[in-house]
Structures are given as C-alpha cells and as structure tokens.
Image 1 (cartoon, helix red, strand yellow):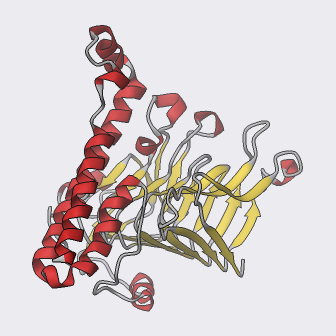
Image 2 (cartoon, helix red, strand yellow):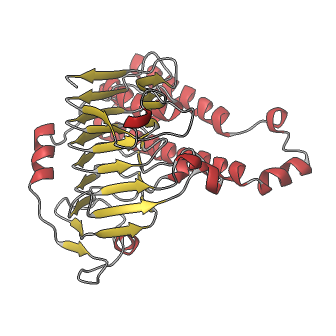
Amino acid sequence: MTNKVVFIGVCSVFLVALVLAVVPTSDKYHFSRGDDKDKLQRDEGTRDTFKVCQEVLDYTIDDLENSFHILGEKGIPKVEDFLMILKVWLIDDLGAIQQRPQEPQHPLSLIISVLIDVTSNVVIAKDGNGKYDSIKKTLAEVPKKKIPRDLLFTFKAGVYKQNVNFTKSMSNVMLIEDGPTKTIVRSGLSVAFHKLTTFHTATVAVIEKNFIAKNIGFENTAGTTGHQDVALRSTGDMAAYYNCHFNSYQDTLYANKERQYYRDCTISGTVDFIFKDVRSLLQNCQIMMRKPAPNQYCIIAAHGKKESLSSSTIVLHNCTITGEQGYLPVKDKNKAYLFRPLKAYATTITMQS
C-alpha cells in the first residue's frame, strides 16, 4: 500500500508540475489582449520557443507512457524500481535527473566491439552508386518501429548539406561512414542569423534511442557571428559515437539528456562547446579550442545540472585538450577555461587528461 501511495504521489506531483510548466497563465502572458497575441505570432524567435516547448512536452508524454508500460510489465511489487525509471524519464524533462536502474542492455565492451567491427547492407552515395543519394531520402524509408540492429546504413564520402532529424519513432539506427573528414553532414543554422532557439540550430538532431554513429563528421558553419550554432543535438538514451568529428563554434555538442558515450572523437568550438544536462562519457577524445570572437573566452564544458539529487555528469577520460592553429596566436588574450556551471549543481570531471 505504501508503494502504491508513493507511486500515485510521484505521478500526481509530476503531472501538476507539467501543467504549470507548459500552460501559461493570463497574469504572466496577458494572452487576453489581442495585440500581444499578434505580436507573439509575428515574432520568429517567440514562435520557435513555443515549438521547442511543444516538442519537449511531446517527449515527456512519451516518457510517461513508457513508464506506465514498464509498470504494467513489472507490477506494483517492483514499484521502487519503476520509480527510479520514472525519475529519469520524467523528472529529467523538468531538470532533476535521477539514476535509472540498469536494464538489460549491451555492456560497454560490446558497444565498442560493435562500433569497430561492423558491415553495412544499405549504401548511400551522392554520386548515385548507392541505394539512396541523400540522408533524408534514406530516413524516409526507415520503418517507424524498432529497427533490427543488423540494418546498417553506410554514407559514402561527400558533404551532405542538410539538416537531419532522427526522430523518436526510430530506434537502433546505426550509421557507418568513410571517415569523419570524408563524410560530413553540414549546415549553417544559428540563433543570430535565423531567429531560432539554440535547440533548433542543430545540423543533426538525434531523438531516437540506441543510436550509433561511426566515422562521420557533424558541422555547423555559421561562425562566431552566428552565436549559438549546434553541430549535434543528442537526446535519445544510450547513444554512442565512435571516431566522429563535431565542429562548430558556440554550443557545438548539445548533449541534451540521458546516457551518451563518445569514443575517439574530436570536438571543436569556442564557447560552451560541450554542454547541457547529460550523463556522458567522452573517452580518448580530442578537445580543440577554435579562435573565438574578439573579447570572447573559450570555455569547453558547461554542465546544466539544476538539482542536487541529479546524477548527471560530463566526464572527460583520457582526453587531449589543445587548440587549433588559428587559436594559438590569440590564446593569451582570449583565454581558455575547462568548465563553467550553467546551473547551481553542475558537475564535470576530468580524468587522466
């Protein structure tokens, strides 16, 4: 009975908090006034902000449904385990991430072996020598359900100039490329130039779970004047990246939430170029400072943990931290810093780096 009460209480608190978070009040927003409505509809930045709210709310509803599905499988007697999952999948969206109990999954060593030794059965090439010639055409053919891990996509050498979204309806997508300097996904969306939120500037957005990428480059070419310009936004749980390059300037790697693993990757940028509230391990990676805008500092990691109970952390293990050729002449003027806290309980660890 106590477990049931706790479960109902947590769900009730979450739902109330969710309503308060996403439903604006008339006192705060004055939506009763027609001129304010028109102003909000005309402002591109405000419209994009509400799109982000709607998208995040959609993810949260999915997490709630998944949580109830697990409860149905495990039953009330194991509600304590379910509550741990609830805290990660739901409170994560409200900024208070908790440790999820281990579920059946591939151990880290198996993930590494899969990343290193794989073959492909779907080839994408810009020159027409593959089944598809663009990433978006490929994703249009991806089944909207759990994909078997033996369905692998290879993108041959070339620069694919497009914004790509691996949606929540996908799962287990795996990309294999010719090399991070040969196969590149590139765009130039930014906050300053396109009146978007940081969330929607990503060249590639990964929402799906169990995403794996090997030997691919993610780039945003907006430059320092574009302000926030994300190369990759990774949201889905259990994402893994092997020998990938992430190149931009401000906010290069938007490691949004859940569990993420980066091995033998290169991340370059200027300000907060590894950031957000995530449980991430970056191992054997190259961290590169780029030349920032005048009077601007370089800051590598900016963690966004809001709550003391959260277990989210950015970990740099056995990484090499240095500067690109363009940064070295200005390093004394435009100094570089390892970390800064975005929120009160930010946690970043550097080990053997």
